[in-house]
Length: 160
Image (cartoon, rainbow, N blue to C red):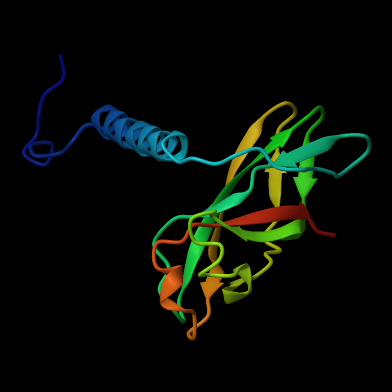
């Protein structure tokens, strides 16, 4: 048994600090996973990247309400069909931006704008990666009142 000195009193053991850090990290990952799985989306088109490997991108959806003249982040998921994939950038896909059926007439998609991102993401072989694009979806400052409550969906494509 070792003797305790006055300088040892009040110290937190290294093992206790490491355990506390691990618990905090697990809680952060768990809450991120919960947030990811509680969002909704639908299937999207596939794009090719790399030697024979493919990646499928879900359409991106806003992470918060969008006000005229403002922007919000959008969230999507990239899933690898075979080997590991590197997505160098994301751009607006061929289907563009669509507005939900209830708002489509009163709020044309032309009121929305998408900003491409060249952040770059890696998707593991047969894995999925959640992608958030900060400030990527904007609503025109002159958007009509018919855009209130509209849900815009952004088709994404792999850029070069």
